[in-house]
Length: 234
Image (cartoon, rainbow, N blue to C red; front, side, top):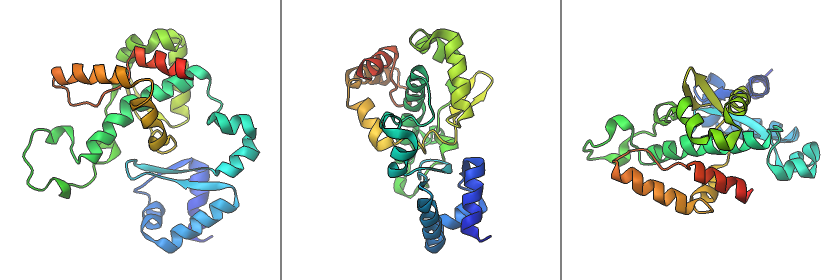
């Protein structure tokens, strides 16, 4: 078995691999190996999924294959994991609370530890890893802020377990952190404008003003009003 086949086999078995994995690192710098991997995945209706802002890579169905495998309803719903509606809403909220501020820190080449420090060459900073730039959420705060809209504690707990099982989040006691697939399978270019420029724009603008007054370094995230707007828009 050659390296391309071995890498694909590992991805299909484990569902995701860290960018530090030996074969992943090689594929990302070896154009020939990467082309072989992409070609063989495409022959099976799959595509390589990665992001420079994420610490892991994965695979997903090609759009043409998704329509055949999932049917028109499944493909159009963008929900090939069969997540219930409240789990989808929770996923969007967690994505906004974690990925939006993480991307802001990464694109500005700034970590919380570096905030406020003078830097003569800010553009020379390496891109912060997802692990170092991602905020960690409090379960208690999430339950207090969004529990009523997401089915209260029972449904919230069930959906958090579901999202953790699918690799979107990690749980550590009271903490909720970015999972290996949260910033890989959800398309930032599609989702971010809908949150920042869509029905939630006014809510986010108000929250940004409050955060600026409190001198918070975190990016704005949708509140319970924002979640209501998501459900209304959906």
